[in-house]
Image 1 (cartoon, rainbow, N blue to C red):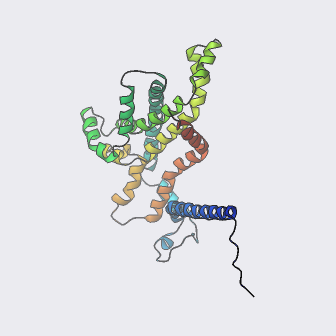
Image 2 (image 1 turned 90 degrees about the horizontal axis):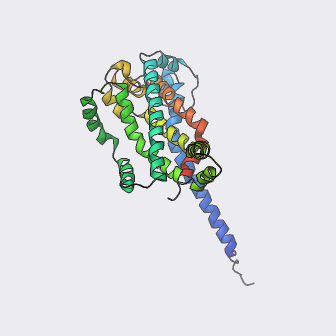
Image 3 (image 1 turned 30 degrees about the vertical axis):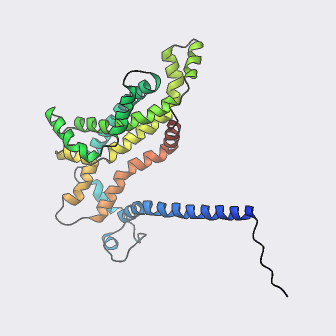
Length: 293
């Protein structure tokens, strides 16, 4: 009895099998990246609920056996906690308002008007984003010291606006440029003024882009540490990130890891809540602004 070779699968089945394997591989890679990125956050949150013995144990405790809120209570009652929260909120709100207003006006001029030096201005805005923040700290300090803005929240606000403004302008420029000018012209043909067409047509359409840039400014200003650490020396004017760093730099009895992780969780909580509430608008704003000019 002669042996017959097994027939090869048809080309369509081979392609389908190949696509399935590729999809499984990409999903596995994505899951691995997700675990690597989220595990430190999970460990921070879980440690904030652990007691001292579980934290210092040589056997890792991935889930707290006896959850406690004492670490959060100690973090909230620590000196200058509420002062740092207040200072951070003042700085963040000022940065968001000022940067969004300035970025919107600059992006509107770049997207809707033609003037000399327009291309050079866009190149400069794009180039500023490539400069490392650490390289700007000393020049900023020298400049602000000359105008008496060191150890003042107003100086930190100005520095943060200068840092986040290029990205905001770049994002809003693409977003505004993607809105057809025929919409404004049609509104003006129907009897609306240029200001009325701007308020009724352009402003609602650019709303998601404004939300996306404002959230970017919020996250950058809330999490920034280097500029605030260099610019602010008074304890009552320091932001929440400097207050958090004092857990390590300001102690001589070792690090209270439970309270530190609880404080880190409280510090990250406003950004997480804000992002969860408006993440749909972030995605839509960024993708809608990424149009070909």
